[in-house]
Image: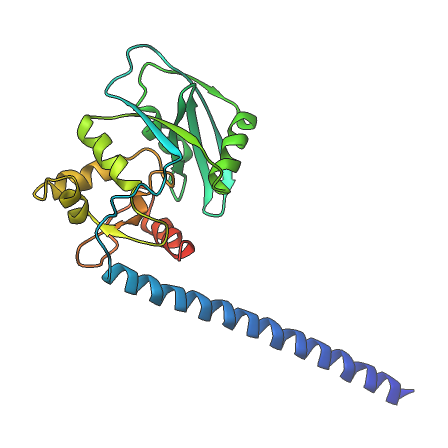
Length: 230
């Protein structure tokens, strides 16, 4: 009888050992895969290219205006993404705000997006937002974007649509592309005020040195977005 108990204990130990070994192997593989992607990203950051003249988001249409002439009705809501909670807002003309919550307070995120529409009436509706969320996360197009910005800002935001997935460019490259190579600082400022993350891919813009530069919703999210697009 003791022999049977001993054999059973040994068998359980071996199963536990194999499971732990397999779990450790999977963790090491995940770490290795992440390290490999990090290295690929670093090379991309260094070997960046000028913007293409092709619009890689042809199905995204930007409707822009400098200031709203009349109050807009805006529907908004929160949804989950692989990068955490996101806030989406939309007028009848299209998406007017898309933001990561990141490590910020949700009320702070709301105020940062809503300030573009000072005369709007806001209505929360998560069910309405979920339809848009599926299109965004699954890359289903077409999508209309309704933005408020100066002519210069709109020019920069449209230029960002020319950066293909998996590629990066620089602030100075964009300044060169729009025919104003000395406007690097102004370009960076306009990019920093982009109210539509992901769809207007400001995360694909880096410093000329190859450094990550800034990101309105946090460098950790920017890094993860770039890695996910490799």
